[in-house]
Amino acid sequence: MTKITAAITAVGKYLPEYILTNAELETMVETNDEWIVSRTGIKERRILKGKGKGTSFMAIKAAEDLIQKANINPKEIELVIVATATPDMQAASTAAFVATKIGATEAFSFDQIAACSSFLYGISTASSYIESGRYKKVLLIGADMNSSMIDYTDRATCIIFGDGAGAVLFEPNTEGLGVQDEYLRSDGNGREFLQVAAGGSLLPPSEETVKNKQHFVHQDGRTVFKFAVSNMADVCVKILERNNLTNNDITWLAAHQANKRIIDATAKRIDLDASKVMMNIQKYGNTTSATLPLLLNDYESQLKKGDTIIFAAFGGGFTWGSIYLKWAY
Ligand code: UT7
Image (cartoon, rainbow, N blue to C red; front, side):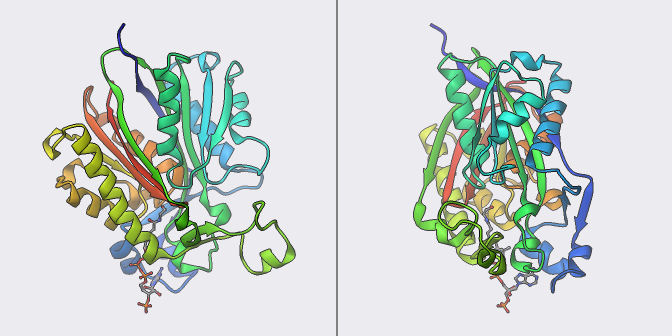
């Protein structure tokens, strides 16, 4: 029997119109363009404005972009996964709302929540459903409205994050293209270093949590940076070794866009030339679950069938890992 692999067959994206530049941030907090660019690589990020708009707004737009570009009937989609760290609501599934709004009325749906690794883990989930033969069209969307949990008086976090969404469609492939291997990890000892402390079951919302700014992202940047650099590089080395790949075999590195210095360090560790490293952090900042699908969108015109892509991500939890994929179109 021919082996079924899970291939990405279409991509779509949505970015809010509003551009928050480093120059505007200079008017909000004690910072400057030179510091932000040299420490993070970020020049601007997008912010979703407007009452009543949450993560689902961007997820729907990205999915509609994909559906229109790929010319597919949304009724053929069997599963919709929304990878996110900022769901619309605590209890009602964001994915269920998105699936209904895009017309995927024959699908079931769920959210996949793993901080900045949500989309990477989502690739694992989506591809498993395809490889098992159970479903033939799985839509994976990475969407985050980070501005909903950022304190715009905290210069340590407000300069990093942005809003956005990207979508990919997984379908079965019998040419050996698509997901080849994965190496995923997590370590709960990391949760104190990057978190939104309140609003969940551990610390429900109260006047005090609001007063203490505990609904905002808090991060010990230096510690997260250290773990991100070593762990992201380690998993890339591991996945290369396991698949007998050298740097010459890799066409692209698609790494989570959290900090240009982390991406550069990962590329250096596997001895990869900068021309093979996908990069768009300068335009969007850290969009959490949307960074990887936004990279695929931005680089789609340069991708060729059979290209070898190494995905890597690191995020809160801690959660991290690497996935090896062969591009299918
Ligand atoms: O996506 C999920 C995973 N997240 C990450 O991977 C993020 C990892 N961390 C980082 O990317 C970096 O740690 C940051 C970009 C957050 C910070 O860069 P850093 O080089 O680690 O800076 P730092 O926190 O060590 O701060 C260095 C200095 C400090 O001043 P002193 O104590 O040396 O006088 C900060 O107060 O820079 C100061 N600083 C700033 N200065 C201007 C911190 N933020 C700013 C700012 N503008 N926005």
